[in-house]
Amino acid sequence: GSKDRRAVTAMTYDILRHRARLSWWLERGAGSAAAARQQLLAYLLLCEKREPEALRDLFDGSRYAPPALSGEESALLERLAAEAQEAEPPAWVARELPGWLAPRFETAFGADAKAEAEALLQEAPVDLRVNTLLGNREQAQAALAEEDFETAPTPLSPLGLRLAGRRALRASQAFNAGLVELQDEGSQLAALLCDARPGMAVADVCAGAGGKTLALAAQMKGEGRLLALDAAQARLDRSALRLKRADASFVERRAVKDLSAAEDLHGGFDRVLVDAPCSGTGAWRRHPDARWRLTPDALERYKAAQRDL
Image (cartoon, rainbow, N blue to C red; front, side, top):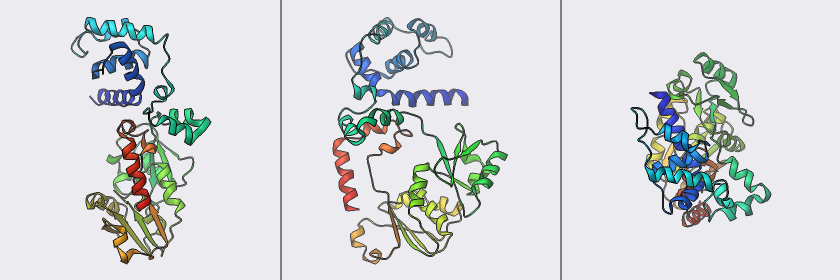
């Protein structure tokens, strides 16, 4: 059922958020890389604070329960419970950071490094941007309320609404009519800071699926030239339906592999927004597994791509 699916999804994401400490404890307890079931057991014991005896009752092999614990698994739980009272994981483990990245966090954030790392472990809120081509924030909030979506104004963006809980927004009339669009508050602010105005020529470089393009289109009220650029045509194609739904058909989309060779674009814009490829650190709350895919080599490639752009 849907309740079970939500619970399993939430637990899976939480295990990903605590991957460093779970792996660290399991390597101490099992002496090797842990299987998924061992990770789940460690999570229930160390993060949800379940007692070993309660877990034996839970894993009883009945119709809707996981298979019973093996003798080895029971012994692992006992070892983990004992060691958790005595050992203290290193800082990078406690902060759920790749070991190579932890010193960079200290350099970047200084005394705030611990707080920043902890903040990135929190679940991301669901933010919506009101499409001012079709209405204002009060109208959008009222329309969502009619469909039993509870929202509150975002603290910083004047165009944002924060959804209470996690609901299937894409089934709502407000979304399908183009009145609201899913967009994190930070992205809304980045677009607002461009100060795009009607009649301007604006380029959104690395436009991707068009989230910021849509925000810029609303600022420009459909007047002027707005060009969405990306190296991949497939990414631009994903924005077509969004632009149509938002009544932003004046936007031009163009795939460009090499900006330096596109001489017709040089010097022709009042505003240029560059959302360059990056480490993705800011999206870790929404994609907790991404922190473990980032490598030093990938970070250097991102830096080079940013300089080129």
